Image (cartoon, rainbow, N blue to C red; front, top):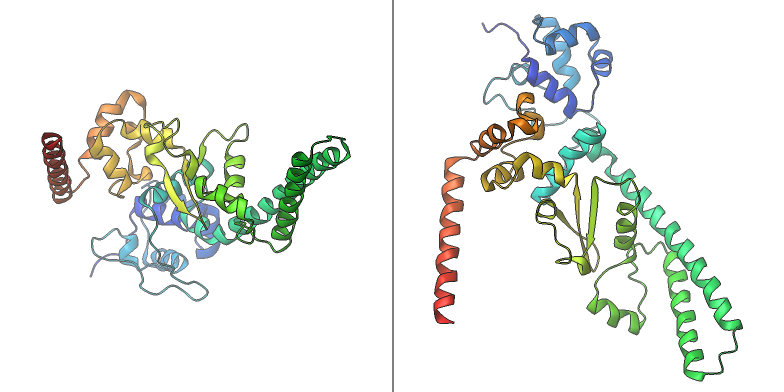
Length: 324
């Protein structure tokens, strides 16, 4: 019979994935914090009772905590939990990791808090638009009081008033993406510069002083001042009638992978998690070893497929150049 055990790194990884501190896990499992700390440090083994309690607290099979290959996690969540499966852009998964690294918010908590984050942003965007509307109204009142003596100018002022009325109604209806604003001139403008007020709000937040780790680009910004070192790590978010690209600490991802295409692929496709990189490889002095280690994590079959696609593209480009 296999003796109960807990692999230190496996326990640490799942504890952080659940967003538990050692103290919180101690509370949930009724195992002392000191015992959990010693297990994670590899200074103590776990008896069958400890394995059972920690496994139940994390809703995992004991074999998973033992780090045995092929053990797998529970297929069904514990009562009160639901499994949500949805595809996300590959760089969005990297953003989850960087949020965990920068702010200590685990993946599990980021997902659980997503509705809260979305609601806070939505309410914030409406308040932001209301303030802008009040500023526009003040400017309009000054314009209306001015004796311009020019009819076309006055007509343009009327159009501004119509636009404010449409925006006021949109805010009243909590129209986050501005879909209720059906003014014909606005629609013509949006055909050239597709965006929406919520996307504009996100960009304004990211542009605040001190928000050095976050970057947001609107669809109209794509291609302008492109920084290949950081922007290549951006994830694309499709909103209502526009899209947004964003990144979280993209320059750190560039520092980790450098210019090596295989190291970048390893990060993008999840072959390497930030938390998996050995601590002795994180420093700049170890960049060559780190990049080589990351690149080695790309499966040979995937590398061969990527090389074949690159060769096919180069051949096609050469054929096109010959025809030109």
